[in-house]
Amino acid sequence: FAEERYKSNFNMTLELGNISLSARVLAMLSQRLMDTLLVDQLQQPECLAAVARDAVAPAVVPVQLQQFAVNVTPSIHISCGTGVEGDFAETIETTVAALMRGYQPSLTALVPGLLERFRP
Image 1 (tube, rainbow, N blue to C red):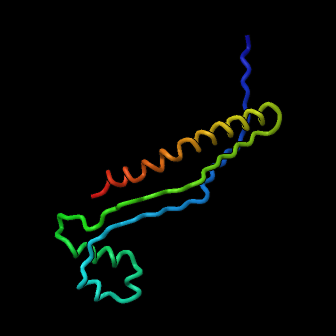
Image 2 (tube, rainbow, N blue to C red):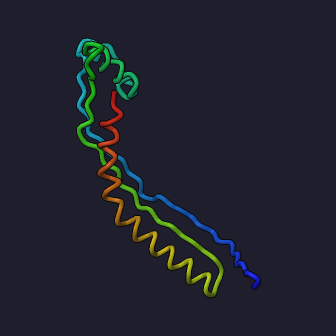
Image 3 (cartoon, rainbow, N blue to C red):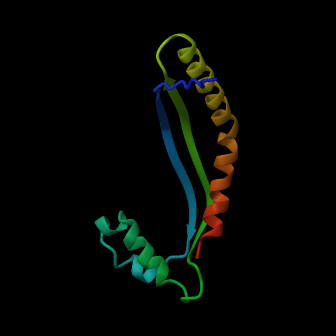
């Protein structure tokens, strides 16, 4: 009894569109050092981070992430010719898209917890 194998190539594309990040941060800054910064330095995050580091003792974290939100619109596209293969690819595409939409709120909620976990 000979076994037949079926092979077919398919293309899969994952798109992450409409990505936006927002954060609300509370930082302790040194007024004395803030007064020494020039206007262009006030627009550079690394300068503000240096002012925050100098505002507190080394054992204290001067910056606290209070809120963090990620919004993204994922979409997946699978193509595999016509006929039964095309119908199967369309079914997989629809199923995966539904799962991605269903888990997006969960993934968005996990990000602040992960950031908190790995914060020094």
